[in-house]
Image (cartoon, rainbow, N blue to C red; front, side, top):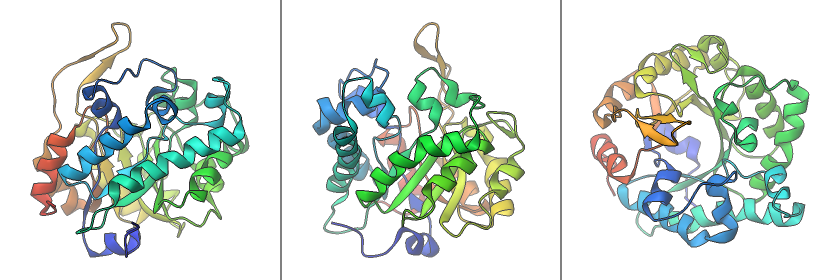
Length: 302
């Protein structure tokens, strides 16, 4: 069941709660994600697990579900012997699985189709560096077919997320032009700059005059970096702000394990909202328990 209101209309009425990290919930369900396709592999091999993960967040109070297509690309699926038609079907399945979990008889739950950065397809951590050596036009050519396939499945919005630099942001916005869907643009940042080292004010300003963009903000970053980013995004883009940071733990690539403590504090949502955040949730290692706490603080519990 699709919501009665558009996501943009709902945002105009008040803040909405996003889901949390999909990968950590899948791992909690016993899924093995040690694969270059990451959670996207399960679109073919175990779609019921993805559906169960979405459902866990709906039960926690999430009002917007982000699809499992972050690392799903035509190129990545081709390396597994899946042709364009099968890859397009798997991208559409990501939307269908989220839509099925979102279908609630008593409340509206929206679906945002995830389009991750070029670096996610490479599966080498380069989405946290950006600057791949490609032109904006080359990046646009990469992103367009996937965005078109996701849009054809009719989600409520596109989530152009974990974007490391302004070149890729420009490319993704161009690739999404004309797809018929609203979208949000979300950078991954380190401190006061994009992961590629660019000024946040200039990065957010890219979306200021784009009517297709209904929110701009940050995700997949440390919670401590969010506070200032919300203020800058609201000021420079003049739009609602989207925020979904990581738990605060850090991935040790050499040891293949997480280090440090959790610094994601749901109580900070009040400050984020006061600064302009209207879509709030969590990314890596933020599970249904913290989304439930966040939902309770926003008054959006189901």
